[in-house]
Length: 264
Length: 187
Image (cartoon, rainbow over all chains, first blue to last red; front, side, top):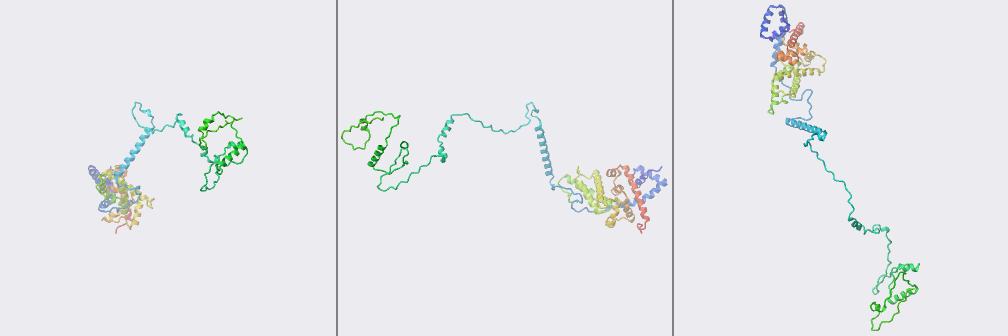
């Protein structure tokens, strides 16, 4: 029985085990069909084998240094230091793990470990307490006194009383006596009715002229004391001794002055 | 290429990577050159393969069989992707190889000292399917076992023998066909 043809090829190449190789040799010598197959294969297999074995003489120089012909590896940046890449990978992995663990522990309830073990510490910033109104104290009068000197007139000058501009005074001459300010009581003006406008200041008069002026005024107008005025009799003698007078001091006895008649 | 994987004392990782590259760069270039029938394209394919090796997780620390299988698998996929990304990506792998013969002026631009018979057979590799071509190259050029080839191509070891046998038969038929044509008959 003839073996498979593929064993003939293996026999030609010497790939069969030693026992099968010798057995195949004995079979081929006795089998004409196998010899015909060998006559067909051997003229091709022998030069093919010798030709391919001669390829070992080939000295093909490798491709000169340059980039790969196709499908170049894409890198964002050249990684030259292996330890740097490992460190970056380790840092990234550690960071990711830390974030995951912290996220998981944050989502778990706080009473997960109810035996009093400290599992995590939460830092919370203390907010300042809201402002509260202090009760009324004795400081209020002080505040009131602080407002005591408040003058709306000063705060609002427009609402204050009109400013009275004093009349122009004549220039003072060298031997001219000092001016005196005449103050007219507004009460007299009201009593006298619509009189002449109040004169803030009048030219200075001599003493006799002033007396005459006062005499005219008393003669023309009679002053009346107020109704609630209470009078008390006073001894003029005692008063005259102490009252200042413009009279020249003399040795003459004081004159008898009749008492002032009471007001009607 | 070595500029990117410069051997230095920075660490064990880069030292292991440099050792892997030093061990498998030349076989990968030969493999890709036969796979693509073009040295320039093979350089690009190996360059991309080594870039993927540098970004491999876990990193390659020594030129082990597992790393070797991984490299050849990635190189083959890179070659297939490269062919598909070309302008004539709808063509089959063997058609692309024949087209490269016309554009580059006769395939590989190096002389391995093969005789005319060997050259004829090697030119017929373009008729193989990518999987068959991969298996033939891994077995006859790289000298890998069936199990290692099976890990690279993603098939069982027994199926690798089957693929190899049918690839040789396809080459024999193509050689016979070309020997019947006057242009391919050596003088």
